[in-house]
Image (cartoon, rainbow, N blue to C red; front, side):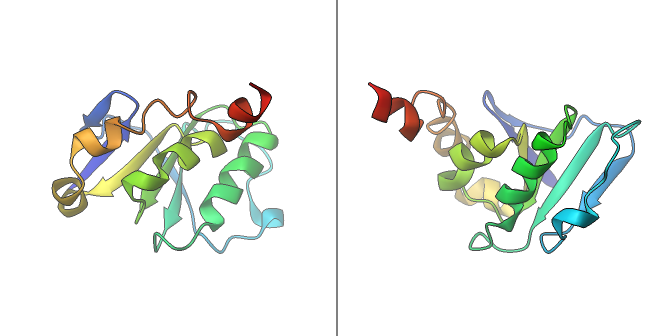
Length: 123
């Protein structure tokens, strides 16, 4: 089973449509060029040390994808702000990780907009 993490906490997966899965090693040229009928794109994170998914999220948003974008796999609570800033709407983690890194740990990073480093530099 999996847990979906959003800015307001843990959720069950409520998406019922087709999912487009993208591996972390996908080249930019191999990303979808058109997003018709793509309601959710899930980008794989095989390891919390593999940050290529953050780049893929930025590329997808830069290409105009406005649908649901989900980071899936080994994302840890400390990476939640980065996931949101790079364009992800939510994170999918397995239930074991959700037990080790509880909802309060994720919620403490849900104010990611308030802690954006560029905003602090401008202040």
